[in-house]
Structure formats: structure tokens, C-alpha cells
Amino acid sequence: MKYFVSIGIFICFFTSCSSDKGEYIPIDQNPKLEFEIPSNFPDLDYDLSSNPPTEKGFELGKKLFYDGRLASDGVVSCGFCHIQDFAFTHHTHIVSHGVDGALGTRNAQPLHNLAFMKEFTWDGAAMHLDLQPIIPITAEVEMNETFSSIIKKIEEEPEYVQLFELAFENKEINSENILRALSQFMIMMVSANTKYDKIERNEGAVFTEQEAAGFELFKSKCASCHAGTLFTDQSYRNNGLPIDPQYNDIGRKRVTGLESDIYKFKVPTLRNIELTFPYMHDGRLKTLQDVLDHYSDGMVDSETLDPTFKNSDNTIKGIPMSQEEKEQIIAFLKTLTDDDFLNDNRFSEF
Amino acid sequence: MKKIVFALLALTIVFACKDDNETDTVEAGTINLEFANTIDNNPIVLNSTSYTNQSNESYTIAELKYIISNIVFIKENGDEFTYPVADSYFLINEEVPASKQFELGSIDAGVYTKIRFGFGVDQSNYPLNGVANFIPTAEEQGMLWSWSAGYKFLKFEGSYTPQGGTASDFILHIGSHGETLDNYKEITLDLISPINVNGNTSTINVNADVAKIFDSTNTHSLEDKSDIQVDPENAPKIATNVQTMFEIQ
Image (tube, rainbow over all chains, first blue to last red; front, side, top):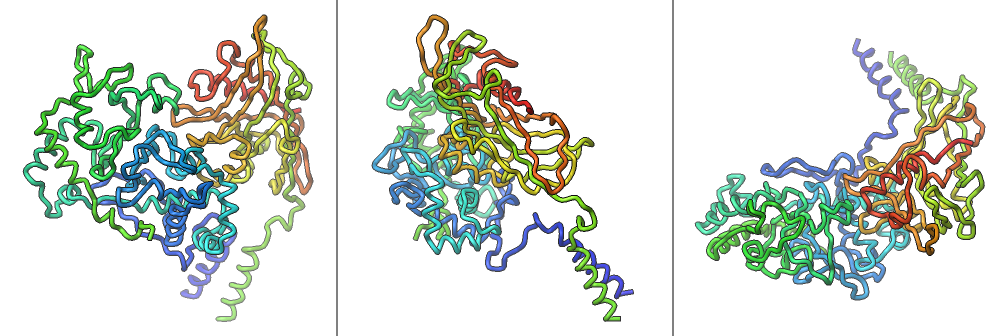
């Protein structure tokens, strides 16, 4: 009887060889990376099964991320404007810098917890993490490069040829695999080890009195937009910044074409906010104090100003806060700094 | 006993991997798709020939490019053969004759009566299923909105003159943006006569009546709007018109 069973198994095994095509074949030299969703985090938005991060894919993504070959001048890599020490922002730079000293119009956003986000960039122009790098790579004022040219440059580097072979089943150096590798690197950038997280997960940390007061204020004054553990509801809103005529940035309207979206920008995450200055989509505010001053006293009205900031008689309410309250909120915001993430060697250039 | 097991094993290996088609006479074949861009049944001529739309505006065409994708051949009984998605993105550029015809190999044998294809890039496939590999082509042809990482499905540019007016440029760049504006369209056309794929090469001629970009389901006057790019009102109207412009010849 046993023989028949094993024959049966063999038959099943061998007859299945014609349908193997789409199945994942594990490659020994390229183990999958563990991705664990922190217990206080929401579900992933990125479908990991479509592009499972692997050791070699991650290594390749990291190499690409820090490689100036992705830019026309051979210098301005992704990591040029996204510096780990500052939660992958361009420290102190108001707007992003590009090749030949070109200046962008928006402030480089931090990179972390991207696999939990639905859309990318300040106006949500990229609907998938794999698409986001196309924007800075091809923008004239950023990396000013084309994919054909990047592919050509990369094909000349034996180290890259080998990494693509190891990282991807089809071994090809093409735009899809370049974007997938970059995503694998970015997917792994999870920042979830702040003091706040340790409190939320009951890992023994406690707020100081000032931080606790700040957290209570934050919940009532800020958390309707900076919602949940990611500190953003991922919506687009006009927070009453005066229009800067130098840029006249129309925000979300650029993507949807809708008048009702003019001057709206994505509600940013506040994780590591202590380090990601300057603030706002155009980096116009230098400190957290400046930001809170804007919310309490600096807003200007316009057609699309978020209703949250208005009184019932349509006058501007903003977010009323005393100086003491602002200091408490800032103390709380500093509990969102994740030193483990900022110093995590896996993501470091050197 | 062991011998029997091995014999059986060997047999299963041989049979399992044998081509099923060997006993039949049907073989995969090739279908050539040939696109022609016409107005009033004449191939369009870039720059020099002037056309008139239903809004009485004369126009010349400087550039016409569009993306055809997701090609499917359909049999009488509704069975479908889907051409591999990653390889089914094509950019038709009026200026480049070679871009208007492409060869689709390894089509399953059978008798097909309909063809279905997409205009543009299906959002659910982008950037998945190899569609990101169309980026270099689109980029070189100016069919990528770099600021939004999205494809332009249609690039239609030229000059127009309203009746009694002066000439100015028109620019139509139609694509999808964000989740709110999806201008991808599917087109299903009956073949004039069924195509029997059986190791042979067949040709399907698709005619695009370019005049329908302005005048079809919707009538678009260039004087009203001559620059349609990220436009939630006019871009969908143009895309709907494009959906109607194809016919089999």
C-alpha cells in the first residue's frame, strides 16, 4: 500500500511540472527578509507578496539608493537629499537640491514606514511605492536622469549585474527591477521604536509630566488629522499657509485637476518630527515653535482652508494654544524620535 | 517491486512533460496588428494638411501618439487568449511607420472572432506585472509625466484656427491621475472575418478615425479649451471619444 501512495505522490509531483511557470522558486543565496508589523501598527498597504524583500534585493536597493549613477551628474543620489541622521530628510535645506545646483520647489519628505502609506509625495502624485522614485529620478530639478540611461550605466558595472542576477528570478536589469529593489530597501525602513511606541506597547516606558500633558493636548488639538500610530490620516488638506508667490504651489490640484484641491497637501507623519526640520511642504518654517505659532495665529483664509480651522461664522479659528501648551506639545512630539532607526546600520550608506 | 516504481516514475516524467499538442495538428501562430490613423478615410498627414472639426475650427496635426495595451483575442464561444501583459504595451507614433504595426507571436491556435485592447495603461497593472518596463520607451517618446510617474495615454498636438480667428496651438495630453481620474479605456471590436490561428500569420488592420478625438460621443471645441492636460472635466470626454475611434478594416 505504501508503495502506491508514494507512486501517487510522485505522479502528482511530476505531472505538475507544466504549471510551474508562475510559482516562486526559492533561491538559496537569496533568503527572504523577515518583515514584522509592529504590534501597535496598522496593516500594510504594500502587498509584500508582489515584491517580497530579500537579502539581495535589499542590498541592491540600498546600493541604488546611495548611487549617484541614478542622476545625470553622477552625484545627486536618493541619499543626497534623504539623510538617515535626519530621518532621511535634507537637513536644514528648505527645498530639495538637484543636479547642477538646481533647486526644487518642495521640502524632501522623511522616509520611514512607507509600506504603510497609500500615496506618496506632498500631493499624492505617486500611487504606489514602486512608482515614487520615478519622480525624483526624472525631474529636471532633482536627478534629471532617464531610465534608459540608468540601465546603460548599471549594465557596465559587474557588481550590479551580479546583484540583479541574485536578487531577481529573471535576472534582468530593467526599470521594473530597479524600482522593486528600491522598494525592498524602503519597505524595510520601519521606525517603531520611539518612547511613544514603548508606552503604547506597554514596554515599561513612561511619559514625563510635561510629555503626558502634551499628549493629552495633542489628542484634542492635532490628532484628528495626525491620526493613529502613523500620525497621519493620509488625507490632503489646506492648513492656511499664506501663498508663496515664488512657487505658487497649487498642491493636490496638480494631481486631480480639481479646483477643490487647490493648496491642499498631504498631512505628513509626525514621527521623527524633531529632526525633520524645516517644516511644511516648502520648508518655510524652521522650528516646531514656528509651526505651532502658525497654527495658533498665522493662518490665512482661502477657498479650500480646512473646515477644522474655522468657526461656525466662517472666521478663522486655527488651533488656539497658550505658550505653555505649545511647549507641552513639543515635549510630546519629541517622544516620536526613534534613535534606533536613525542609527540602524542596515540603512546606512557606510 | 522497485523496478515497477521506477518504470512508473519514468513514464510519468515522460508523459507529464510531453507537449499535449503533438497528437493534434493545431499550432500557435502569429497575428500582426496594423494601425492606420486616418481622417475621412485618408491617412493623416502631419503639419501640412488642414482638417476641420464639427465646431468649424480648422486644425493641423503636429504630433499624434497613443498607447495600446492589454491585447486579448476572443473566440466565438467567448474563450479568450490574453497576450502576455508585460509584453502587450505599444506606443503608436504617427511619425514612425514602424510603430504602427507590431507582431504578436505565440498566439494559441483557434478561431478568433473579436479583439479587445486597452487605450492607455490600466491602473491595476501599473506598476505591477512588468508594466514598469514600458517606462524607458514612454520616457524617450515624451509619454511619461515625470512629476506624477504616470503615462500619457494620448499626446495630440497641433495648431488650430477658429472661424475668423487666428491660429494658436492645441495640446491634448490624456492619462490617469491619482485614484480619482481614470482615463484607461477598453475597446472590443468584431473582426471582419474570423481568424484561424494554426501555425500561420494573420493580419488585423485597425483604423483609428482621428477626427473622432474631437467629435464623437462628445463634441469638443478647441476654442473652449485648447490645453487639456490634468483636466477632470475635459480629459474624460476626450478619452471617451478615443474609445470610439477604432474600427477593423
